[in-house]
Amino acid sequence: MSELIRVKKWTEFKQLVTELKPDSIVYSIDQNGMSQAKELTALRLILLARGGYHVYLDFPRGKENVLRETGIPIHEDKNGNRYLEDDDVIQFIKREFGENLKVFSFWTT
Image (cartoon, rainbow, N blue to C red; front, side):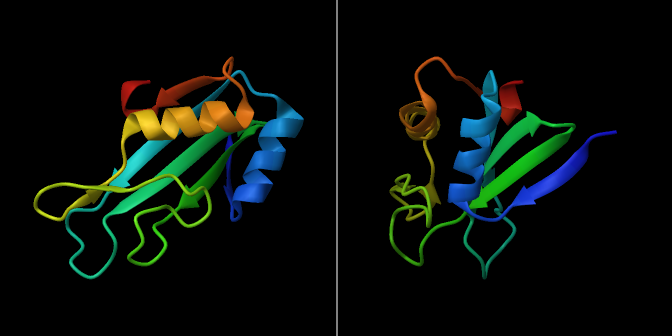
């Protein structure tokens, strides 16, 4: 059985990817529409390696329109709802780790 390993810092996740040289990374854009008090949007990056799932979560930086550690932009619709674009996430991952890395959305894998 695979172990779930929470990676707390972007720098740690980045180092794991650099060391382990995976063929792919999976991401999930999480929206919590039920929460009235908390931020709705979060990014989850998942790396399957060394018998476990290494999972990194990034959240918005206060009311700024970027994620706290990765700096990925957060967009806002006409109703003021904040969201992440798939293309922004994919471009960021490929810029950080190279164009050859396969990037998959959790919802399409």
